[in-house]
Image (tube, rainbow, N blue to C red):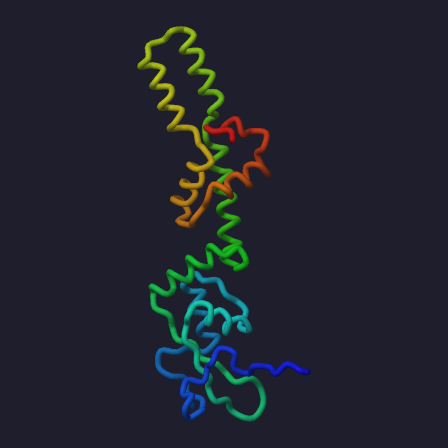
Length: 197
């Protein structure tokens, strides 16, 4: 038994009752090339025309088929220009998806920023030693509390690194990624963290 190929997987015939295609591109729609150019201007990195149908279907962007000239070649598509809210939503989704080009780029930036923040942070272990010395010397409680506050300000936990990365890059970052990156790249320096486990 042979599988019948669906020639219209995204249900692109907009006038189903009459069953015909648009003669010309409707107002507010773009050709594939114009649509990719539009996406790239909006910082949605997109290169492959053959993925446009799936991309638009996944992101609820309306598409239509245009009547082609001649008998040969594929039927051309036109894509409705998304508004700014749609563009923002698409960017958020793509940044979270590690299989997209933008997602892979966002992941690379997050990893770099995690290491940068960790490397610039002070060592919690060094502060623990300062606090212990201050307590052994019976220093004023005010002085000891000052050292503890400074430790909290200058040292990081995995959670605080994740929050800082999210704030700086405006891309979601979680503790799990921070743990993975630090275990892979800085496993011998985890004493710097406020919480070791």
